[in-house]
Image (cartoon, rainbow, N blue to C red; front, side, top):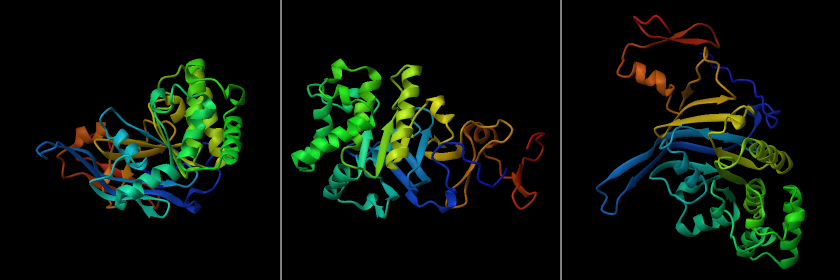
Amino acid sequence: MSTSSPTAQGKNFSLIEDKKKIFIECRDLIKIYADEKNRVRVPALRGLEMQITQGEISLVVGPSGSGKSTLLNILAGNLLPSAGLVRVGDTDIAKFSRSKMVDYRKRRVGVVWQLPQMNLIWELSASQNIQVPMRILGMPREERMARTRELLEEVELLDRAHHKPTQLSGGEIQRISLAVALANRPELVVLDEPTGELDSQTSGKIIDFLEKVNRDLGITMILATHDRRLMARGYRTMLLVDGRITSVRRGFVNPEKIPVFVDAFGALQIPLNLRERFQSREDIILSRESEEVYKIFVPEDEEH
């Protein structure tokens, strides 16, 4: 197991990562759902540890029920965690009051959900949809119009400004949804399966537009996805299993070099298939081979 950082492959990793500012940090993040009488308690996040640098595109992957939606909803300001730290910028949003959380959603974060009806108002045109977040902020009309045109140009849909969602293709709807998410000039954009409802050709175009917006505006983006095309772009990809991040990698995994994740407490989070194989073992050994290489040995096991 190599402890050195993998080489970045994506377009937005030209800087040395160590010198970038940590923009999002989660420490010992816990979220427990309970019924009204607090009799049934279901843990969704179990001490999650995560760091994301400013201006980065990051992916969260994992099986259904692993906690991806819960994590995104916490970062989007729709849920408060049960415990732990969630720092966005210089602020621990886990400590926000209800009014501060509403202000956070209005001013600092943009969201693109998988289902189009959650992003857009079907009775409004593309231009009118983009103006909704700006109206909520009380932005003057001239500023709204200028910002709307700027965003339509950014997603290359100026010619569709007066079309309603029913008159747009699936890819155009997602691009307008992205423009809506950017309308309040957010620090962070959270995207839940942005290519999940699209065909492969349209998905590729949406990924290109996400990269373009990230490159042009420098906005931090975190995406929950199952799209292998996104994973192949070389972004930081965090595997979430049972409410904890078990590996962090860029691109696809070399089967001979299985990635693991060490959290802030020094606990080694190993991939699910290895965890099931080695669970309840107390004799696993971590051996130092050199300054950069460590190996995990399992006694009486041919593989290590």
